[in-house]
Image (cartoon, rainbow, N blue to C red; front, side, top):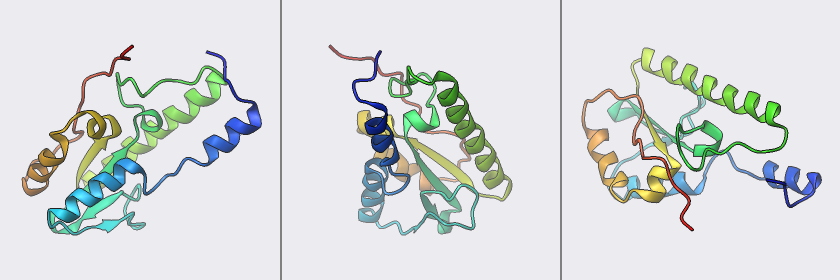
Length: 153
């Protein structure tokens, strides 16, 4: 697929993508606050600066975008058609960094919950299930694992 905008426009568009306070993150934050959970945001003293830190539950939550964090088999985790080597290197690096940070958190005694962007978009049960996971003592690696998305024409 050929890009429909010039390089300068694409660069400006990509540089405006936010790393924090994204729409999926705000959905989770508002929901948890309404349910009475209190949390800290983007704690710099923890590996990866988790999106939400619930110290009372010894839990950190990452709200990952499917594209940037390469959600396996997800419709939204497409690869750009231009500069393939650059993007492959960048996105693989993101995944490796995420894995390293999650491992460090788990080794430090934290539970790590990963909520995928598509899980919020397409799974109405996600938010209620998050409450059960927070209150439980389960150790989990990734959740929710939503099925691959298909383009609907």
